[in-house]
Image (tube, rainbow, N blue to C red; front, side, top):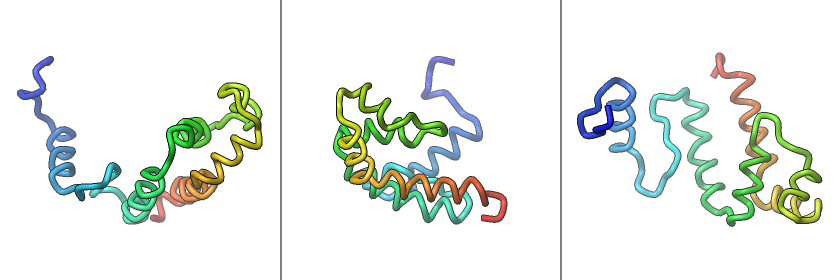
Length: 110
């Protein structure tokens, strides 16, 4: 329905408990996730928390499953490719992608 105060269900109850137990300053939390993801999320949260607006915009595209070429993103944002690379480096995008790839590749083992 349209009345969220009357909503129920497993997903809503589970997310409510997760929010209740989530550390105050954290934006990413998955208490029922596999251990590897539970360990990776606080680090990702810490990294993302330090992003500038432009770094977050670049990260949005560069962390996609099929990211654009940096030169394409540079055109989109009216930047140089070197500037996009600087945002990628400063935001830790390559390191975050590596962690995501490991988690995806080994998700059944983790």
